Length: 189
Length: 253
Image 1 (cartoon, rainbow over the protein chains, first blue to last red):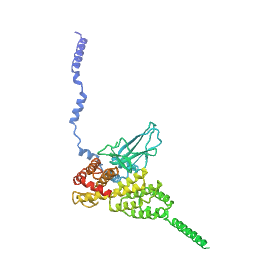
Image 2: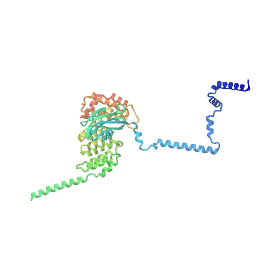
Image 3: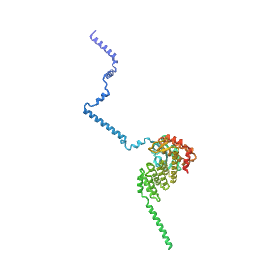
């Protein structure tokens, strides 16, 4: 047997051995990192905190000043928010109207010039309805707080107080008016 | 000669009456006085009310003195800003519609007195505004105001007689049936309004059961933010159909 042949046999044997053990190398890097992590000393919160403190006295005073100023700013902002200074007056009504229900008034009125709704909610003064697509269906949505509301439609100047969508009707001064309950006891829509 | 003297006397008398009439008309309350009086009442429609009064002043026989006296009576009443404004709006809209306020003026004073008394008159004012919007005769609207004021007082007295009391704001609730004034007022207003609607719709006062059912239905349908369920239970336990018949009869007599 020639020396060259022995070298080839050894090389093949080694290759076979390495190939057989190759599956053991899977995830080796992760295992090593994990192992190292377990052995490293854990950095505790107190240690982390003390690490933040400046090493010199002057530095620590500076840090305290920054901390105090930040706290003061938060305090002032909190007080202003509490007083409502950060809300513009224009926003206030929308905040106040959260409890309101958007009530839809609908009237079928073909070939009419004007349709309006009058009621307790507008002190019986006309709020116009719109028919943007000219299909004869006039609508308006009015936000109302919970309660009982009497109303009627005024179609081309004529009183029309019997809305089919009403919860009930009342007759006063010889004419009918519709009634809707908004909130509990009636959906008002 | 005698005839000439008589004729001269008659002409003189006519001219005197004309002069007095003219002086009377020009000596009417100036608009500035109304402006000043209205300034004492904080409201959003002050300009509109003043404009309507200006229209009224241009009409013969406009009761300017009485209207000014009413404004002076309303102004110092504590609180009730919306009600005060609504009373004056009622007159403004009547004038805008071209009608006379003569028959409405006494009702204005009655409403002012009711306001001083602490009665919840918001519903009555809305009814009056509704009547004006409908174009109903002012005399009919005035009659409706009288009837509704009677009903308010009757219902309030009925509740008092059944031990349901009105606890003034800021005072401690001494008994469970002494309701805070807002809650008490809501009960009074809703019951009186139901009876009034029933009567105006042609209902008979003797049908107490029917009125009681209507009152019960109304109170149960109202949301909790308007009338609290425990108040509804309390009032329906303590009043009955005969009581409501008495209340309705009082309004009609």
